Length: 388
Image (cartoon, rainbow, N blue to C red):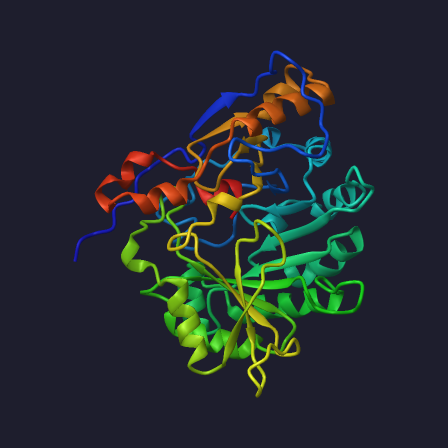
């Protein structure tokens, strides 16, 4: 058996200066890229650190005790994040997701949540404010986050079997503590809509063929009827450190097929344009979707690329703007903000100029190329650096 070779890389890759266009671009809430995709979602990484070492994201061989994380002075302050978020909202962003690394490792994160919760769209509506976490610290943080204004949370959980889960996180963390965090989030009301319905509490499971395929049905059984939406994510080729190969990908169609052998499913319409997950609802005895039983989602970024509807921008913890999860370069907004003393109007113009030039569609291009040519698409930023 050949040894796994993991390259030593700078996960932050090439960064371009964020420049001001010749003519100012004032925000009007209708910003679109070169493929007519609007700017709707912003994912903000608040830390490059994580307390897990999942081998598909931050493998221990690279992210070891000697790995050089960003110094705190390089991280955007909460005030800087909120300022940039305000500009993005003026351009049409309606949803902000806080990510990491593991975002709950950022000290006093609830302060940032409270600042972002005060922002309003040009139409005067509050933002859809959510967070993705590995759940390890959620039990102690859920109530604080809810009180600060967080609306929803997504928890990453790759299996219910404790041995499998410890193998996946690679730091011997018990699954019971993550399940306790999910229950704490539910008790705090994270994901409960204005009508008292559970609509926003989600669990994400990355499916890796050699590791946790046998956890698909146990996960489905556990969360069916719980008010929590379980989503299965195809193992993706993010960055250069996770040793990705197509053989480890279990297509989402196979996931759905496995669940349907035990639980009948019916296809559901997307909730919104640009939604990454295909929705499947559990059926009742008459073959109709039963909301009480809930639904699952499948995210098929490898086998069924959804680039054409992608409306997400990503802001790294040190203020670099990335236009794709598989980006090979970013733009430095922190330099423009800190050292060049840009006004909000300047920041709006720079962001608009970058987004208007966006034509990223990595997953679609990869699908068109044979395996031996896919390396020609270039290196990619690490998921742990800009969030999933």
